[in-house]
Image (cartoon, rainbow, N blue to C red):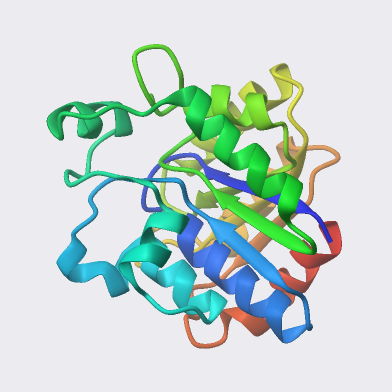
Length: 225
């Protein structure tokens, strides 16, 4: 197995849902899995269990404790806005060098499968100079791109893939995560993206929280690692 970076076209399209489902699938296959989501905006300590790091820890079978939350997501901010703005509002900042070092250390020590989940979309600012794209370039892992099936996702997805290609980042696959109550169908969205994308697998994942780990899409992603 190997390491992978999970990114998206924007926020709330299903990055953590996909990451947690993949973790469960890999663990069911007998793999040792580690996962981190170094940056989280909109974090409420009183709701740690349902936060993104809490969801990842539950999938990993680990206790949701302050120490585990800190290990999984060391940069946590209160407001649900872009990380650079959330950090400023908290009187803090994201140290890009420290962020990159944290990820490189996780990559160096992982012994089976490692998932690093990004924050927001690929061009979200992290500080005054760096975006998530810079972060991905710095650590240079294969990228799993999660997109929604909402109306507008076609342009967002093709734009994101163009940016990744121009920066020589390897896209492992695109996962179309179903957007509830969307006028655009899941399969129609995935089929349209496939027509415009060559050489990249495009997978359609319905929102099945209780069964997503066993969905064939997870097996397809695991085969890419």
